[in-house]
Length: 378
Image (cartoon, helix red, strand yellow):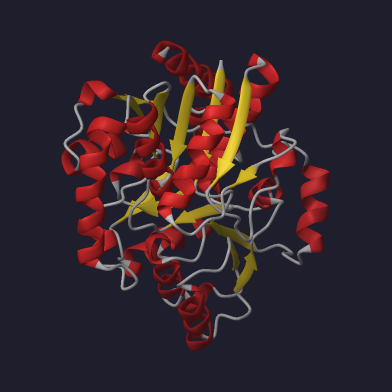
């Protein structure tokens, strides 16, 4: 089987990581021929060599039609059986090519809730432009997509409602993650905590880019409600800078939380940071299927997260996670206080997180499901 992976970029996000991990497995285990094509370079971006690939093709043109022309040339040369596209701009190129060429199957991954009501509240989103995109999205998927893969039931339902996609054209296969390699390595983790000067603090961690969607500002507001516990915890914010970075820093300064919050930026040692932490906090306003929560479960972390259906596909409420209403910093603070002060509860929830990960999100099972779907398309 010859496959082209067509993706916006290799930006350091959950969809990009999950997709690269899958194709690394396909290339090494199944020995299929895989070609990666990105619309553009990104900074920061994943190093494709770490996933076993020798090269990646970047289209780099700004014009849609220039990109499409170059992509069609590559299709003619490579002659793929399947083009698998991920993320909106890449999806449009894949659809247009499929409508012109008609000699490959186009599989499209649905990985987020593009038209979420919460996204419309983002000050950086143009509502009229987004509605135009939705109309274009609807029209092109009719003729340009053979089949869809969604990473969660909530995501599938979203596109059934917004793009009127027939449910029989979508298969739901969740994201998966490898086990955390540092989980039981107490010596390494203690050394790492010492290096980070975490001392005997309760370590809270959030892993997400700094954007309106991820709602780190709500988390900082919640910490302002925990002034009496300032000496007990440290929060690590892990993820690349974005539109919300400035506001996050301003709130930290406003509340005097400089000693309690560390902005670590993009990191290549996230698995180690998770293993060195005590509580995972995830206040997102909307998601796809959150890979960050799966990574937290693989690290055996108790979770505090927003009450959105996407998160609830990953966690078990009051078993390994406590939930709070979206944007409600006061209830978030109450949940954090509960876990910071209750060691036994954290230990119980840690075991539950590991159990859920083992049962639902072991990566080999997920890889086989997606690979079987691709073979079925042919």
